[in-house]
Structure formats: structure tokens, C-alpha cells
Image 1 (cartoon, rainbow, N blue to C red):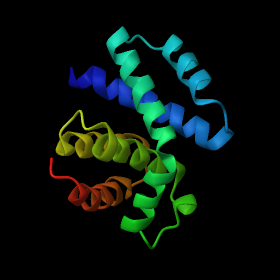
Image 2 (image 1 turned 180 degrees about the horizontal axis):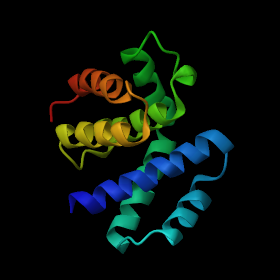
Image 3 (image 1 turned 45 degrees about the vertical axis):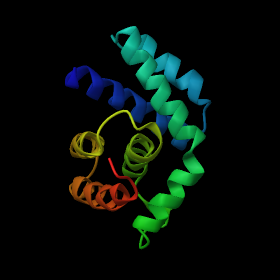
Amino acid sequence: MTGTRRKARTIALQALYEVDSVVRRPGTVVERLLSEADLSEENSAFVRELVDGTVSNKDEIDRNIQKFAPAWPVEQIAMVDRNILRLAIFEILFDNKVPVKVAINEAVELAKTFGSENSARFINGVLGSVSTLTSR
């Protein structure tokens, strides 16, 4: 289950990154990426939910990033790190379907895979602060 959920989060991250960088419609990007992936319908729905929720709450999510990473204007954070943070903050503050520790761990793993040398530490620190907003 963890492996397929991580794959779903990876696809969601790819979609968010593409939407952020090329300004495409999220639904179109998600459907194209899902057509290339081998995911169950449940995990495909999970990808859609993550992307839709992250995009729908982007402004509030970005305010949280700014609050907890004040030295970094959101638009100056590396694009992959910014979208990992957006995805994880959506899961932590809005989705409430996985424990906070799971959302943070998954984000750190995505950062280790796709980010720079310092991404995992940066993302862990920001999400650790964000997690203080929830009692889960």
C-alpha cells in the first residue's frame, strides 16, 4: 500500500510541478499522467483528490509556507520543493486522511528523490512547524 500511495503522490507532484511551471489545466495534466501510469482506480482517485485539493487551496497553503518559511518568498523556493510543500500541507491541514507523521515522511521521501541536497531537511523543518497547527 505504501508503495502505491507513494507512486500516487509522485504523480500528483509531477502534475503540480507541470501546472506550476507551464500553467496548464490541472485536470488535463492529471488525466494525461494517469493514462501513462499503472494505478488502481482507488489510487487514481487519490491523485485527483490530491491535485484538486492542493490547487483549490493553493492561496491558503502558500500563506502557510510564507508563515513558516519567512526567509523564503514562496515564488523563490525551488519549484519542486514548493510543490512538495503544497502537497504535504494540503494533506496535513485540509485532507486529514493520513496521520501528520505519514504526510511529513512522504514529503521528505519525495524531497530526497526529486529535490536538491538540502530539500529534505528544509521540507521537514517547514512541515514540522506547520504540523503544530493540527492536533492529529
